[in-house]
Length: 171
Image 1 (cartoon, rainbow, N blue to C red):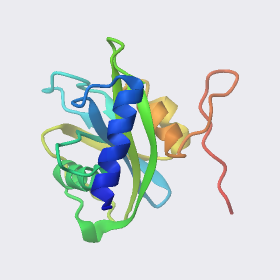
Image 2 (image 1 turned 120 degrees about the vertical axis):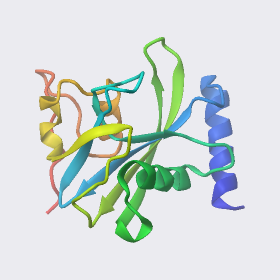
Image 3 (image 1 turned 180 degrees about the vertical axis):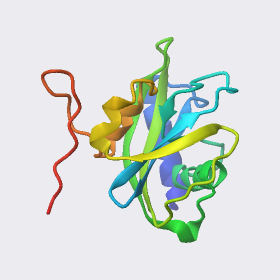
């Protein structure tokens, strides 16, 4: 069985288990460079999430594996090419609700890059490389970003004051 077929089987099972329509599957990719993560600010010309900070995202196209969709979105939104990627790690699948309470299936990824400079496409106004522990300073971030950063290991659970702690480094 190919990875694409395995991904399709996982998607089908999760869609059935959580009652998620097939069109509500996306990828969310966190970009790392030298221990920092990239936050991207959505263009104000977009109809949704405009002006908010987030990671790389995209709808999963029919017949495309989540991994390939992540690679395609990285190139489209930042100009990163395969040779710029040091590592691409899949994370857990998330089921997150949108503002109307509709469930979405989210395939999470982390990519490490050798490139500091990103080329923004029309979807973004700017980007910042930050320490994951500083993400709470970006109050104008999408509501689901903390869930993705926690799932990918960039953030740990919320502390007693509601602050977010970065995961301890291993070494």
